[in-house]
Image 1 (cartoon, helix red, strand yellow):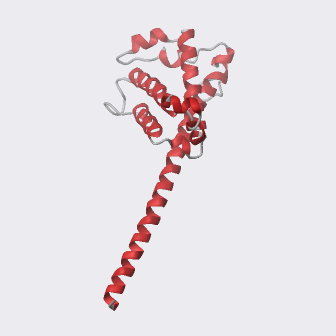
Image 2: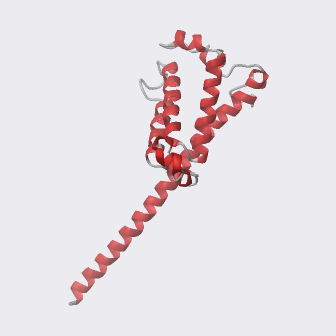
Length: 186
């Protein structure tokens, strides 16, 4: 082997080693980034649930908290003025809609926090977020895209990449016999 060919093989070996390390690192960073996004979305849903339930004083004053007789949907839905304002105003304060909304916030938030049931959480989250997006139409700052659309797409992505397997119980959950039998529960 000549000195030149030895140099080429050494450089190639370093490049292969670098690529392998970079690939593993990129994959690991990606897994943790998606786990972080999952946990942030969990906090977003769980905070909305807690604020509407107890009235922590940010979006919901204590006197309008659900535990104090307030409706978690009235404040938002009764003030909708957009394209579907009449439809959503008619849902405001309905006890069934209040329960559905609150169970949705809690269920989606808990599933995201634990990293389990992400497929169902993503489906429910997309429905909830798309309804909130419809209630916002027409949008003030963009003709189509707002945080509701972005969060909905992210939820689908989190379920697709099994984001609950990192910093969550998703890997354990996926091995349960019932979840293996019904993969929609993953």
